[in-house]
Image 1 (tube, rainbow, N blue to C red):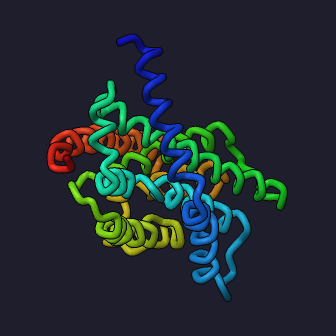
Image 2: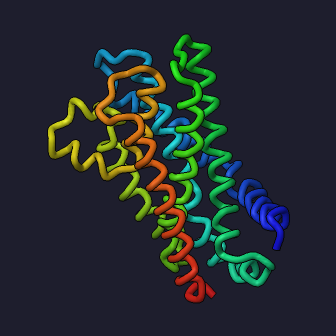
Length: 247
């Protein structure tokens, strides 16, 4: 199979996902309103600068949007009996997951760019636009595959996967430096934060806006790339192993 044919099939899956799943109200709400309300609940009554606020809202929006639908695509398609039809078409599991991740990445980047542009209109400008662009794209891919990894259990009940997803996503928000910078955390909490991929996204965002860092930039980039590769390979392997149980 040529590269063009491979990419064409991946894009066809991505278009299918965007048409069915990604242009729905709940995804917009989870990507924009939920991060905003979470931040307002945290920041209300506290003296927090506009740059700190923008960094936190961007990190949460990117994380929630990129992981909004990925965890439930496989359960939905298993329940509606379209998963087996997809597997019978001339695509393999890697193509299916790449298409799912591409759709999720496009949506996550699109929502995040909207927030960045709005923050610039309000007077908050990034100091390193190249690092910001790399971080948004790399993080969206990383979180997209994290969402697909969470959907690997062979369940046909989306609520079960969503519960598992929420049990992971909300703790990550609170330990990843989104609300409290790593440098202000107790030592034990900082060690736990280093296990979260969102921590490195947040640190790179802080670097993009010239805020104080606790992790060197090259460490954060290396960790983010490592997590992306790990989530990609693990999601493909687990979905391939569990695919027969969905039929």
